[in-house]
Image 1 (cartoon, rainbow, N blue to C red):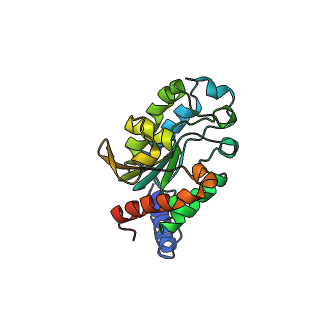
Image 2 (cartoon, helix red, strand yellow):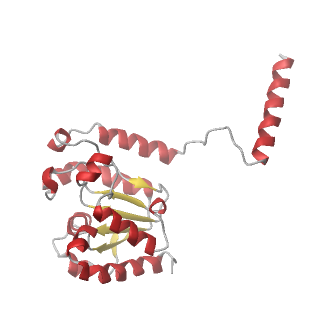
Image 3 (cartoon, rainbow, N blue to C red):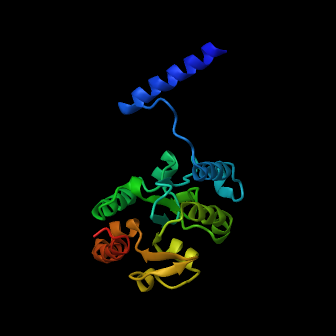
Length: 216
């Protein structure tokens, strides 16, 4: 028994030496938040509450920093998101990445997700019953991430979270309150691909976010 403790003490000393050199063989402890997010993702993966599960290739749960101060929320996955299982990876996603870079941030600094976790056929708008079934997953994501600011991308995510039918060009440009979190609506990157003249408005909106987060 004494030999076992001597061996254990020796291993501890060896690990200390390696740690001093910046090497760590021990796995990182998984936080409670990571476990809860992982469990929620598994729940979404098994979801069959609406018919979209029949046509999806992958769920698109969301990705990014689980401790992010800034959260972007779109409406639904598209073709490339459905294939990859990641949000905003098509042309609109590339534009969103450029916007994030211009804010002096990286995609891994923020959290990105959608109202729906499955792609609607032919990229049509989400149906009310699909939103109703999927919204609880998003609400739980928001509760777990606890961002300081939410940016809703486009009319659908904005109308769902603010419970309004007002047009996005009337709502953008100022903060609203969503359960104690500052919410700022702006145009969806896909809209900007067809209407590049509105990029200046999105940049104005992002400057408001940057000011709130002291990123200027």
